[in-house]
Length: 462
Image (cartoon, rainbow, N blue to C red):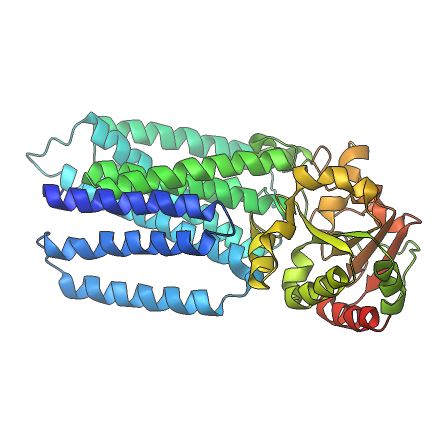
């Protein structure tokens, strides 16, 4: 444990203020870039200041690790596609949890040396950091594998899973108590291994559209583990930063669960009784009404009000720039156009906002679900681009559907609906969307970017 000078504590406090301002900036797409920059400055200051006061014994390995991490971070940020952003978030979150657990284990080794009396609360914080940090690490790795399709996105169940999970949690609590009363490295290592097991078993039964919510929950766990490690190290910036991540991750998890009309417990364990969003389903062969770009262009060209519902398919096709061009043409013709953003559209919160901001879409055109749902009845055409579950009426009408109770965008209330889809495969929840078979719905099949390009040309030709 390092005796931190007062001036360093003040620098850490300033860095913590930067973190708070960063979080405030990230709450709005308009200020998100600035917020991100402030957070990066705070983190850089917190890392660099250590070299000016601490007596470090392994400076070269530390510098090498910083260089490797910096290169990996820069390359990852530059090369990652928008569709892969949730996977990147999951990996970063997992690394944070794992790092906190390793730091706690190293501190435990110092605490168990003769003559050391760390205190009961420090040992509680250490045990908590080990088990929660390791669980967040392993759970995040599984969420990454699911989103990256390295394993099935459907719930993974096997006989005895609930029993093993419950025993793992009970054993973790018991070993945590033992760590406090009779601390030892052996107990700490076993506790970390149990945390890894619990993290894996927590995420395996989660499927489909529920995975991003679990990422948010694990992120909250990582934040709390980092905050606890900050207490162990008596480090202000870790304590404040971790608390911010833990609190914001918890609120985000609850908000996302609310946006899906379900409890966090149901999201985590719903698959055990068939209630989880299940992932990929069967392709439907039911008849639908389809059209070409010219048909859709006529609908859009003569509409007074159009609402765009973007989804993950838009991100996959990288079609956001073409969509913005189409909206610009319609707006110039006098059509009122807005984007309806569902809280869980895409694969993580804010996914669509970031995607559309990248295409220079004006912020005032982005409308949240609660603000725009009342406008669908007065809308001539709803253009659904790559979305599915967030406009599926089954959330209201089919109690046995895995998304039943989830608040959705009221696209079915518009006069006409146009779906842009690659195929008739269901959405991430793995169920059919009855809106596709509604007489007022027209399907435009094909890659979103290619279809939007043809649609843009057809609208210009009217």
